[in-house]
Length: 306
Image (cartoon, rainbow, N blue to C red; front, top):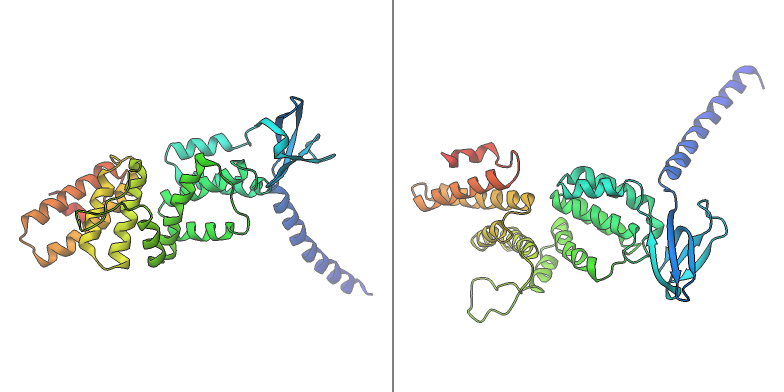
């Protein structure tokens, strides 16, 4: 082999080797350090160690952070347990609580990747990281991305106890919205509707906390507007979504107000001299501006404030 051929082969080998190293480095970066865990067995015996994985019926515990001498400890053998918080968890939670959902979504997505082996553990950091990632996507109005992320998770089902199950169940409706599956969304909504003996235009919802009712009203409004082509019924629920939870979810307020403004604007175009519609548009614009967060009211609706 001459020198030129040798240099060519070395260059090809380097090109092959470099992506392999990069992939290995990326995979290693997603593997977080095992979490320290303090377990008390049913017998009362303490068992400190490191949590390196989980299965539905037990935890994989090691006496060293590198995973050496690991054993599977059945859940039935555990009386109580304390798991150390992962690095970056508090910061992600702070961003979520402050409404910085874009940054929190990235952080929880990374934590979900790092602790994927803990997903089978009920209310463990693997499942909770994904739940908060999904909630961030819902708060951001990124419903198609939410559906995609939830669909990818089907192969590794999340595991929650009663405390978190309600939040996870509520995400189902937003998942159907992201897929624009109006039949499935309608079926989901009807599970929460109460009897309607007074034959109201729409059935009342069951007694639920205000935040859940506001979300259900928004989902039913979109279902009526886009799935059933009934804007008048949709308008009723958009107004309810604005008021039921006293505007605590600024993103939901903004989306509800803008959707209601678009429907109202179409009505104004058909009846430009209707003062009632003008007042309604002004009220919606004010709510959007004042409760929807900074810059919530689009410029094309500022005319209704005058």
